[in-house]
Length: 244
Image 1 (cartoon, rainbow, N blue to C red):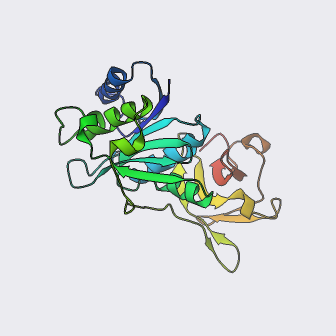
Image 2 (cartoon, one colour):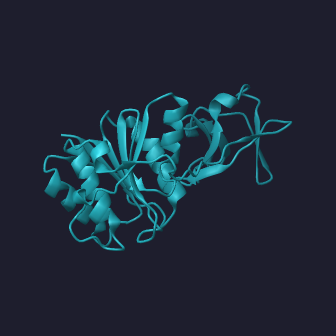
């Protein structure tokens, strides 16, 4: 059975995540559900996009990713479904899927996006405040059960795009931006490590402090040292050894 992933800002306190899973299993009893995260900061669409963007490529072809970070729930914002390459996505139309869309376009992969307007695939009574339960989860479950994306809604091309920041080239190098701070306090930037040509002598300026060179891993410096390294996704990361 198809794998369905969940990415939300629901947390695990109030049972919202369990409700989504119950809806999914009611429609697709054999679905395998994977939790990417439910700890996105409330209403932080960009962090939701980053979490999904970094995780989705490691899922098998045909996986269905349901992402619900939805500050516009109950308004005119559309629910959308998408296929980028060989993976499927269900989310509000608020830019949450932009990084995956851009990667698919850059790779020349096929892109298909629909508005989830076929309400026969929703739950019967739709709340104005819980579209995750009433629209996104059931549509994702139907998709995982073999319903074609084209059956779930009308094709759209004017979906919302909210690109992540990109490093800016300067006379002396690049000006990078912090994309996220992980649970350890390490800072991931938007600068691909491939942009760094001289890994031993390159310098980074961070809030008035200078870091020289890239280390291979945290253990190559002493606890408390400020370091720069290539993270697991190939981007420059700033960290304090054992102290971030």
